[in-house]
Length: 554
Image (cartoon, rainbow, N blue to C red; front, side, top):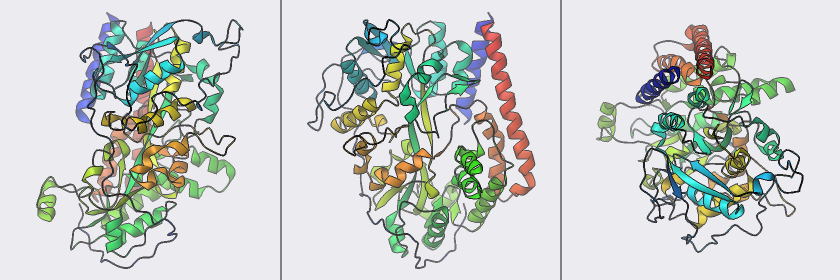
């Protein structure tokens, strides 16, 4: 009975959580020179290369009850590419240590028997769709013939947590799966402890420090990061050209961002310099923290920050750099070169359409948008544009995380599938090759412009087999620029999926930031209150989770 009460409370919370989640400008156009200006390549006008899936695979109809679907064994690539794993790809990077080879015969134990696993992802919700997920699973089975993997159809991400609670109650969990909120799975014996698997895999040493510790709670690792989905800075090159602004290089600074926004703003044509202002509260504090560091210890601490002043343990909304960032936010909004948003009335007045999107319709010089969102609009952007990393080499974004079920009977093998779908070098190289070979067949959900969480370095031929093969440059050159890639290693990421109490803290901080934007207060006036309320909200959330874990498991 206790289990059902806890389950009902959690389901109610999840459904409630799902349900709730402009300034005019007067800066004249002027000739502006911004240094450095080495990069002059412009992005294509229309560049989305993926079409919705028209292919089909044999399977059963999609349901939300954990349907298992066999993965097709033969697919014809749309570009004439090779459907098999490249002969240059090294499959197993797990050494046969005592941990993986308990019987000491030189073969990892998980490769010595026939095993069936189930995999679930909110990016594969249709049994008849060909997705990058299903192609990757097929390639995994080709690499490891002793393992059969079935795609378990669960639900979209909007009902993911509720669906998993039902699957857990029915003892029907997949072996490997994506995790939407770590906190929502922890109390119910859904997630296995994968600490030993992670610690005994030397390849985890190549995971970026900026994401390596994600998926840990109370000293136990329950998940691993899979991909980084960056916050893109999209630059309208036509607006810069019309305003006489030189195209910046990819190693731009936030001072250059603001200078471009100021120079590009034109109230007569309702051209906006910068649209939406989350950068000031999310990545800018880390940039300022790094700049303020005066010794190696302070620099190490600064690089350890995520977005929003979070250091991996706690928020620091009382830190002087956040006050500085909020003051810059106030200046940008009051100065008219950053517009937080426009009402339907203003949109109709300025652009004769209350639903007008100034970003995609060519009226914004700079804006910051998640890759998984922006990719849906690239075909609308009928102007010259490019993608830039975050200024000062700090790009924002979020990660996906994945784990193994507590009830999996083959956890060592499941971990290999988890690794293949996330940070494995051969798995990632295969993924990008499949992306190219089947670009017209895979559903568009596969093209979220996810980036690896690892860097294995260069091989004996001087080639980085992973990062040199990222295929996104066909969309815009900035996607594969050296600066963009490097900026992810030090990213200021929004890690609410992985961090217990993050959403609760944000729910109290966000309204204060809105008041600063609207000019209702200054951050200096509410600084101590904001910090205290955020700390309290996170602590209460963690204490509530710990109590729920203890109550449920007893």
